[in-house]
Structures are given as C-alpha cells and as structure tokens.
Amino acid sequence: MSVKKKVARKRAKNVESTNITVTEKMKNNGRYEWLSYCVQGWQVDGKWQRKYFKEKDKADRFAADKRIELMNADRARRSRMTTLDENQLQMAEKALDRLGDTYSLDEAVSFFLDNHRPPEFTISLSEGIEDYLKEQKQAGTRERTLKQKKSVLKMFKDHVDDIDVHACSTSRVNTFLKSLRAKDKISPATKKTWNNYRNDLNHFFLWAGEEDLTTSRPWLFQNPVEKVKIFSAKQIAEQRPQKATTSAKDVEHFFSVLMRWRSGALVKFYALAYFAGIRPDGEMRKLSELEDTLINLKTGIINIPASVSKTKEERQVFISDNLKKWLIAYTDMPIIPSNFDRMNKQLRKHFKLQHDETRHSFISYHVSVHRSVGDVALQAGNSENIVRKHYLNLHPAEEGKHFFSIICDLEKKRAVASLKIDLQGQNHLKAI
Image (cartoon, rainbow, N blue to C red; front, side, top):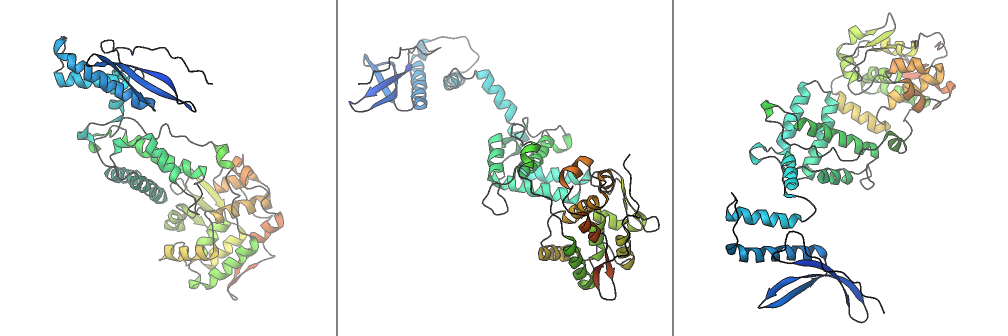
C-alpha cells in the first residue's frame, strides 16, 4: 500500500486577509494514486470550503480569482491612501496576484515597455520592409543581395501574416526559421541557410531599431533576432558538399555547344567565367560595362577595381593564353548580350550548372597546374586559407592542363584542346 505524501499547509504570501492557499494532495481510490492540487481557505455560510484541481495552473488561477473576490467584498470596509481610483486599484491587485512570486509588477511593466511600441509609432512589416529596401538600394547594395533580402523578408512577412514590426518576437523568428525546407521541400534547410536567413532578418531589425526621424524610427526597442541561435562555422562545414566543378572534357563539350548556339552569344561571358574566375553574379555585369578599360589584351591583364569586386578589394587576373584566343575570336561580341537572363537560365538548366561552378573550376584547375595557393588567391580574390581548405587536389595536374588548353576552332565551330598552349610560360601573380 502506498504511503500518502504529507504536505504542510502554507499560507500564500501577501494574502493573509483571505487565507487562500494551494497545496498538493495525494488522492487514492484503492487502486490508483494521483497528485491533485487543493485550493482552500474561504467560507460559505460559515462552512470552510475547498476545491481540487488536476493541474496546478488552473488551481493557481482559481485561487487568484477567489482572493480578488474576497478582497473586493471587503473593500468597502478598508481604507487606503492612494492616488488610484477603484478600477485602477482592482487592476493592480489582480496583476499582482497573476504575477505571484515569479515577477514583480515593476519588472513586468519594464519588460512590456521594452518590447512594445505605443500604437502611434507602429508600422506594418510590409511598409517597414519597403522603406528598408529603398534605403539599402540607395546605399549601393548589390542587386543580387537586394533580391535575396527581399525574398527572405517577404517570406517572413507572409509567415507571420504581416503583423506590425514591434510585434515580431523571438519565438516567431524561431518558428519561421524552423519552417524552412531544403530543395526537396521535405528535409529541414541546411545550417548555412538558417544562418543566411537569420542574418538578413537581423540586419532588418537592427535597422528598424535605429533612430531616424525621416522614417519615424525606432519602430521597436528589442531586436527579436538577437537571441536566436546561430550555427558555428564548424557545424556548417559538416553539412557542406564538395565544391562543384566541371570536368575538362565537359568544359570542352560545353564551349563547342556555345559556339554553335545563338551565334555564340554567351561564349565571351563563359570564357571569362571559366578561364578567369570572374564571379558570374555582380562582377561580370559591372565588368561588361567597363570592358574596354578593364580588359587589356596587350598587357594580358584584367583589372578588377574595388567598385567591381564583390569583396570591395582591387585585384588583377592574368589572361591565360587560351582565354586570350577566346577574347580575340569574339572581340566584337558583348559580354552581356540582350536577352541574357533568359538565355543563360535556359543554358544553365540544360547543362545543370550549379552556383559558381565556373569559378570553382577555375580555382581548382589553376592550383592543380601551378601549385601556387598564393597566386590563385590573389587572382580569384579569396584568402589562401579558403583555397587550401576547399580547392586543393580536386583535380590532377593533367586535367588542369587540359582545361587551360581549350581554345576555339572557328572553322569547325568547336572547342579543341591545343598542344601549342604553353602553360609553364604564362605569367602569374606572386604572393608576397
């Protein structure tokens, strides 16, 4: 037979006038034993009353309401010096009972004021996002970055039903990030995706919390993203797939197709992407606008100024012998032709090119041939540590030589591997 748990009756703090208490009681029906919560300490018609509850929070709420009920009944006989009217005093007492011993009324009020904006300063997420993106565009944020930010913020806005900016909480942000899915639309998004989306949200809410009279900011006092977890570089690396590169044989076939498709409209773009490692997004468009001043076939150098570079740092790329032949053969063709986006999307889909696959190919083949981490880091605009970590030994030297020997045969309209290309005689940047 089980032993009943003895619990001493305790009087609730600050409610001596009502004596309402909540105590734990073990109930037994002869076969089963369970814990219940007993509220007691008031009288009806001179008889002491008690009521049992299965859940403690329900017992606490009943006890709080009962205390208020008894105190209100006794209010006419009590006298206090206070500036509060009767209604305000009742609300204050009820608030104190609901807070219990966990928080003081001052703490609760402080938290509310820190996390909620008065109604006259509220603004919806859709309006706030619109102002934010306009300012980001004026600040010179890259088009691709703006597009990404807009996509993330719109997804979040739709997820929370376009509530006011100040109403966005940490729990809402966490729920949104947990809802993200991978490309298969089933698996959770990668940790890198989590971090990327978190960073975009964090930047917006930091901006929303800055003081600015032209936009009536701040729109909130507490950044809801601040306490959202962020994954470490090590955790992200565990999920990172190997850098996508194109085999030299496939590159040769790829350019043969390009030469015959749409009169070679995209040959120049991909020659620079594959054989110079220019970033297809952002850098290539800016380079195309200043092609005559930045690509110098006489010196054999492509200058990438800070205004063009993604990293905002100037760099130089040596024009390899095979790239020079491509640039000369297609000198009259623009880097970015009309209808580029539509054609490029169709091409990438057909060949299943992954993001930055052209650039990854350039770096990995360059380091496989020349074995100079410093050289390729200077030309690609990466750090030597990144090159060592992600690009070393992805391809053998022979395949690298094949890659940098691919030139165009205009008569046959196909790409070929030339034995006349002298890879060892080409100039290279030297790391200091």
